[in-house]
Image (cartoon, rainbow, N blue to C red; front, side):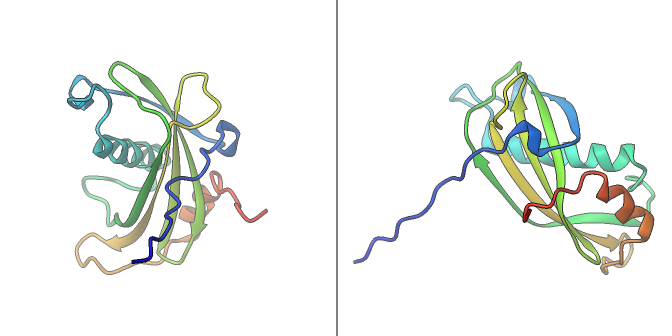
Length: 154
């Protein structure tokens, strides 16, 4: 039997890799039996940070809007733990804008730390709320996304 080596983690992102931040707080029930945030909570934080940005920028209307973003891919690399009652600074960036899809990346930082405690990503495909068919993102939507776009190939 041949054992394949798996690269378990990459290096954490740096605070300077993001040009937009939002503050989030942990909650009492976020801690698990081991005394730190359960891994699923990190995904909730990613989703909250990005959707908060989308709402602030009038890109989605959560109750009655015609378009919604569905997550079709996600992932996370963990570097250090959070626990309640930590305050978190979430750096948000867009690294790919497609016709109907967007890749968001989120770095979760402890206050005053330059390196992320966790780096996550997810891909939204924007669809019509009623039909679930993908829609083309309009110019104004893409223009707003461009304000947090980071080219990782440069």
